[in-house]
Image (cartoon, rainbow, N blue to C red):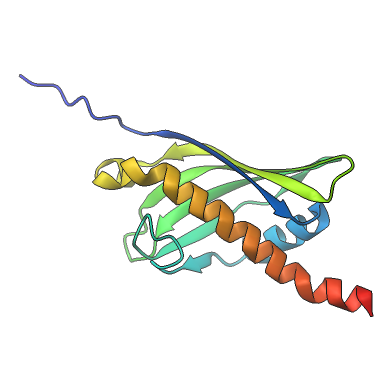
Length: 146
């Protein structure tokens, strides 16, 4: 009898920085909480399929925001691919924030070859979120400048 030695899930951590403040982050998270963010296969090339990003209510602290996230397949079955937490930490004197994802792959991802690419998927997801927050904040920054 041969036992299956494939991992049931993969622990994932990724980190990047973004040019945003925590108010912008909270606003972006709250606006997207009610409606999942649809991502096309081109948005996460390492994954190569359409997905939906679901966000929980963010928790805030003096220089940090924490939010639970789930990445689902974008089809009728809606299998969860990744789950974890996003953490946004502001530097005390700098305008950039550090974004961190810490979580695990779900059973749907581990049953396929995709779990090997999980770290790349999370890196692309963090970059996409950082760009989306910066893009959403850009019009309000312009209004303040006038």
